[in-house]
Length: 196
Ligand SMILES: [Fe+2]
Image: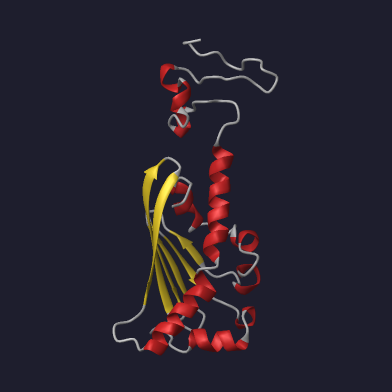
């Protein structure tokens, strides 16, 4: 469960600017800039590449020994299919992320990691390690970033904002027609609603 709006999730996959600072623990030095194409339909496609120096030599060899057809070791693609699907193919593993909006600030997303029919146990272990090494590390970093963005959208002194679809309906928001109005920090009303 992600405590953020689905649009933040969708945007995250299309935004290359957050990578150097949100993923500094790993990706900041491991993912050199790659060609990125944003289509008018909302779909996006980006080349991915990983520096061999980002992980130890042993890990590099273990995670690249069963490359998928057409992919360079450590290389691949990130395909964002608007609005709810991200496919990441990297070296020896493919990850599919899908999302389901539940409420304005709750999004259920699923992660599927796939291999090939007929994979041996060694190949499966390689793909699992590749996922854990190259892909899974991003998720807690992106989650924190997206949930912080959602919190940042919350108004500090307005209990009902039409842009956020009555995010605090419990405090009389449904009775208020105008943008309503608690009070500022000094207790002084900001905007009075018609019901006050
Ligand atoms: Fe990210």
